[in-house]
Figure 1 (cartoon, rainbow over the protein chains, first blue to last red):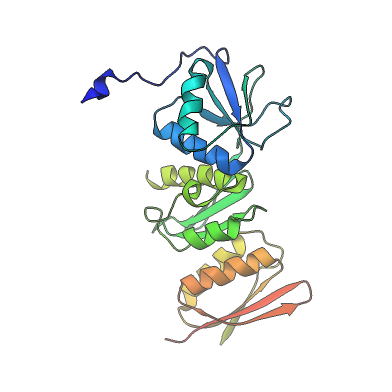
Figure 2 (figure 1 turned 30 degrees about the vertical axis):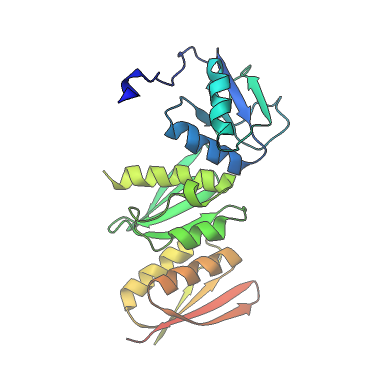
Length: 180
Length: 73
């Protein structure tokens, strides 16, 4: 009932001004934090860290700096603690900026960074997951291959590495292409 | 009759797609797939099993693997 009084958790759109980044120890924490904050309506984005950040993992979360205390409190409620919180001072890189699609007859392959997902275009059955170099790739393949797109778990829910993050982006692209 | 696919030198997902195309074509019998990476071996095996085929043998060869799959019904 009180939902109408809730403040919308979106910061002002002022480009990089007023934006901060949360640096985490590892990708698992980034994925957890992204899922929690996005799920609760925060205006955040996962990005590649700027060169001056030399700690943490290959991903950071960009957020409205003015909301720092609320964001930190929300993360703390799930025992997620960033190793650093700093203002954005330079252009942040997209974490996975290379999306590639290729058709092989009845099959469609989408690659995001180093991860590939291949589906049967006629049935939406996932026939292959490959790429990586991360320890959870075989697990992701085991969980997703031979499942229909509608039934397969999302990589972000079952994986915990940068590969899982890249696969999530490829997966979302496949969903978009196959739902047309 | 046994069909042999040479997927050596191909990157994923091509070995898997070659295998699936052959499976869809022959429906049953025996297929030998030659691959040259561990990843291709795992992916081809996983895809074959998912299609209801049995991995009869996986033999290490010079520079790769020879995977034999079979379906009888």
